[in-house]
Image (cartoon, rainbow, N blue to C red; front, side, top):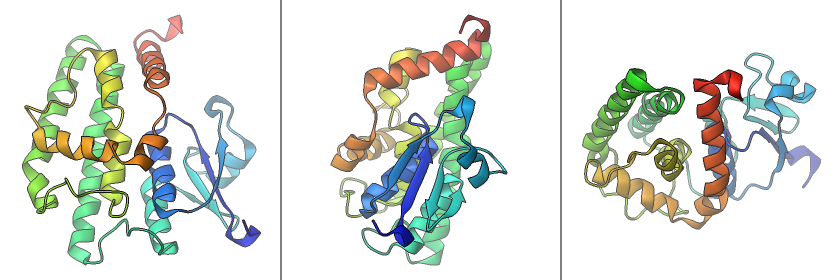
Length: 231
């Protein structure tokens, strides 16, 4: 890879935010080097590249760092025109994608994290809110995808698909650890169909860590949140 076009991704393997960037690079066919960060002992390079948040992901292109996953996805789409466009050309449709990507991240992912990290009444409330938000997404899917989601593949995946995978690509892991259905084909059939269609795409299958590895990590996160002295 020519030095002036070198792409390096600093990440942490379980991070849904890093997974978004990995998927975008793979979908676009962009070669890159990957640097796994030890988050308790962040590298001096990571702190130099992202001094504001000190978090992953950070994409380094031509020696210049870009932070924040959605910002990185848009940078990738604007910089590399090969492969599918991650955002639509139409300004209104682009705005819609940005809105729902924000909804997935702020409303759904944050509540899923809260479900993992809580117990008792707090967890029950978080589960109720998660299902409410999933139902809301279910009701709007036909507006987002008027032609349905069955035709989505590696050649036409977009930013919203990537964000959904990063938020709920591990739903079976959550179900095993938490003991209830996160994605119920009876309650939210359209969301379930959209997600399962995406998870069958080869590039997505390759990018997702093993089920067993994810189960161990989510169990660790849950135990650490509920009983930090025991970890």
